[in-house]
Image 1: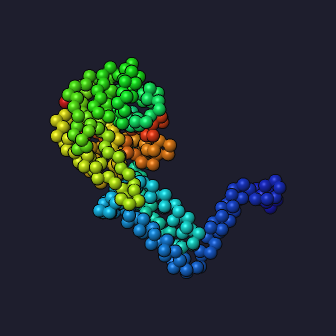
Image 2: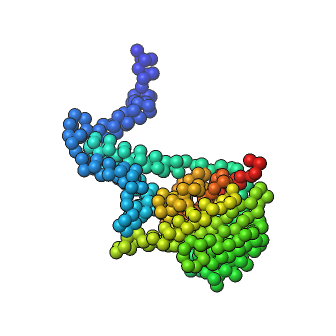
Image 3: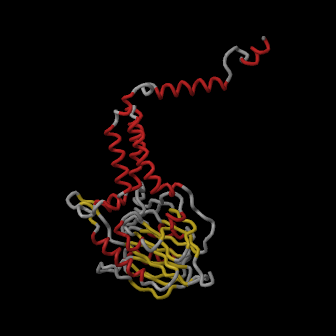
Length: 351
């Protein structure tokens, strides 16, 4: 008996570590479920919370059906759609505090919808392959340090670099700073392309603005020729009296999509500030025929704007023909946007 007692007690006669942990977990469970067990009202409480959860699930799941007639509300919602997921933990905690089983079950709906929309972005899909690295950066016309910004983005190792919002007086500075890294370059209006490989067939792309904010060039790489488009679509604004003003952006997106549709080369890369996300239906003319490198081979959401606290990815790298291998954001520069980069595998004639 004495030996048995010794085997079940510690030297000081108290419970062992395992028993203490079990007892602690039991107390925690009792504390969490206190007021739930035996209370039939848990199914009647929190009906408003449950309704809010169902509404949130409907808004996220059917965002494409929210009309753009009034203030482009649908596009505004789609620009910041991932952030609606923050309401899920708020509803969850509220349901727990309210001790509502109905609300807890209802919260599962928006959680599942959000994961279906964006869960894949929580997984690192970055690969190690690729033979063509590209980068793009809206450098901001009011950039106080264009030379430093140029050196920062050149350090990314990109084979091709696109710059948007180039101020005419700053172009010589960018040219000088990027010359040691890039032998070839072309500037059309307020956008430019710098490349380690030869450029040809450089031309402006008409995006119905009346001035030049988009271009196309053929980049001759060792693998194959690549059509590279650089675009800076019109800015959008959120105004109290007009909502999400994006009409000109939408028209330009349609024109850009039409130009890419006519592109004869197999490998197509689009670089630029599109002032819209992949979820924004207004960019369908472009997004319906191209793949986002961030969505296909990135790590996380890749938000690029505003640089101080990125909330949306409006700076895009999209491909057609080429295969995305990895995609990432670059360190902040003196601009109000973050630069973004990607590595792709170019499709070759022999496969």
